[in-house]
Image (cartoon, rainbow, N blue to C red):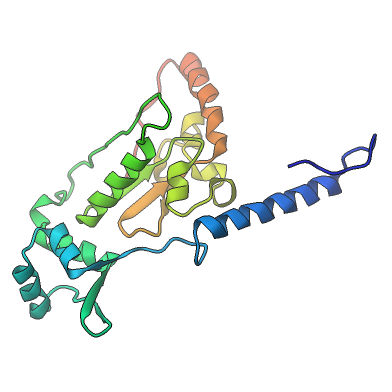
Amino acid sequence: MSIKRKPDSRVTLGDLIAASSRVGAVIESVRGTMLAPDARKRAPTFSTNQVATVCGLEKAQMDYRVKKGDLPIGVMENGHRRKFSLEDTRTWAQSIRSKFMRPEQAEAITIAVANFKGGVTKTTTAVTLAQGLSLRGHKVLVIDTDPQGSMTTLFGLLPDVDVSDEQTILSLCYGTEVSIDYAISSTYWSGIDIVPANLALYSAEFALPSRQKSEGSFGVLECA
């Protein structure tokens, strides 16, 4: 965004503050457009058939468990259609699919989605995997390492506004942190936490080679 000033005049602090205010207004306008109608993403709801599909149940089995009442029964819409919240759906999945849940004390599974080529659905694949696993009852941590922050945006955070440098993996890259716990944030999607990204991550491309040269190797990064 350009700063309007008279010919041969210097840019003052006031000019910079005014430009910053205009940029902030534009960003808020973008947020309102991208995340309409309430400027924040909201978790979806699910029909009885959708919950049954997630849990691998037949309709009769689903109806029986609803009548039994040992799991969330959702709410009735329009007097005849039952809707389940995301939290309710995850509770059903964790109960019905309990044998597929991670055992206590077992290590988590790490899935990396990477490709040097742009525009090959890396972000879409990662988000779809995360939401699919969460719907099936698993607890998921997504780590956005792309400075563009596309995944961060999809989870309802604007990288340039909502994410500080300290909330990204940048501190790990510089070696000032040894655990990623400090950067974990909750999302609007139950069961998914995120380590967000912003443009500052571009500096990691220089920090990591520099550390490797000076330290020879990196220590083990701990992740809860």
